[in-house]
Image (tube, rainbow over all chains, first blue to last red):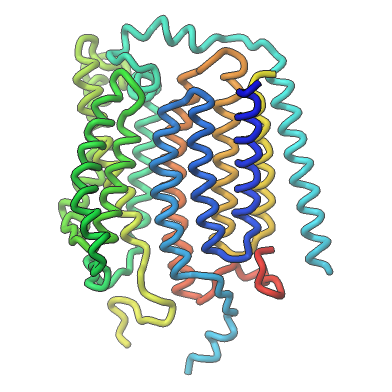
Length: 91
Length: 233
Length: 106
């Protein structure tokens, strides 16, 4: 019974963080929630009796991907300049 | 208005896709299935040279997949490096003035290196192996980069190229040597499986870490309006 | 119905969510996030479905382990490409896809 409770909670948390990562207004918040999604996936892998994948997901999905995307967000942000603006600047 | 309708149509299509996928998963789950792969695997574990089944599958039974995977990583690394436009790989702006990060680096980097070595060694008979160790090693490199520690082996040069292709070439060498010896491609000679797997895993760790680190470092750091390196303006 | 089948269904749902995000979101980094979520869903299906049928199966676990490392390399390459595209064009979305009016994700 407690197994089902744990698995049900984990699955709903996975789906909730995935939806929240895609639908957040702020890109920085989306990436942070994506890191949380990676950590929850690592716990799901442990529940699925796959400890190797849990190790790799914790290191890669939560660690490396998070750093990479945060670095990208800080440079790209939510800016959405159109091409016409750049053409106006060129002589 | 049109955009809302488009969003709705796409949402309906994705819901339909999910339902079809779920239905097919349910149908496959009710079918007992023909082969029994875990049993076949446990019967042949003695011939693989390691005790952990996942490592045995990765490095012995399905080693061809691992060979192709490291090849894909090398290609991705080459593609990433060729686009690199960073003005300097040791940007002095990155050097930290934060004492907390500096102190953490002094503690964490040796610990992470030891952890990576342990993960590589432990892959023989418990969860671990080349991929996890390579990921931790790459994370160590990223931590060093964030703290502004200069890493000379990431400059374009001999050391970078050797590190990138070492894993793939050693693996390919082992595969081809067994062909020359008269056996099948990637068939390890019996009796040498354990040392061969260890050697291949070590170079794989190094190469994986190098590729991931090169991909991280080569993301350009200049803004859209800055001139590129080598531009005449 | 064991717990593994629940995870396989969750994997299918994650595939659907990721596909919706990939098709609908306009910012390139959001598309990348959606693609990664779809990949995680596929990995869940790959590991949970054999687990439901015959217990912990090392072969798909090894394949998913390889898949995770290839996915991070592809994501890193995609980030390099997106940043080069931003450097060259100043835009963060593809040409045919206009952004939304008030700056939200969709």
